[in-house]
Image 1 (spheres, helix red, strand yellow):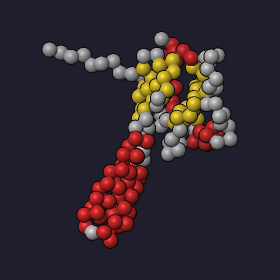
Image 2 (cartoon, rainbow, N blue to C red):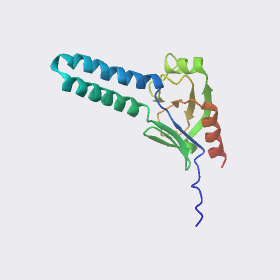
Image 3 (cartoon, helix red, strand yellow):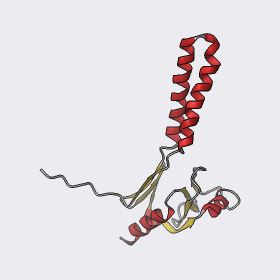
Length: 155
């Protein structure tokens, strides 16, 4: 029996944490192990394993957020926005992304911000019922995300 592949979404990205953060997780475990060293070998091992595991869970959860364009929706983290409620998308290079994260930012905007990702996409919200002026989405592929939104809008 032949299975057909499920239809792929126009865009999907996971905003994974940088590799260095995983190294820091191990360093947190080592630090906790050294703190517990005076109490013996078992607490030392518990601190190493427990500290590394706890730090890894934090890094994993922070880096597990996804951005998807599927079924006429833009799904960014917990937010689900119909593409029909979105206007123009502006691709932000590193300098512009920095500006929109700081002095150009609007407190009413939806910000899916990851400081370790230098580029972003700013998308206007055109829904008159929504007080959110725009979405700021950290993304490693702003051109692809913009193209996916345009493709969904055109269909």
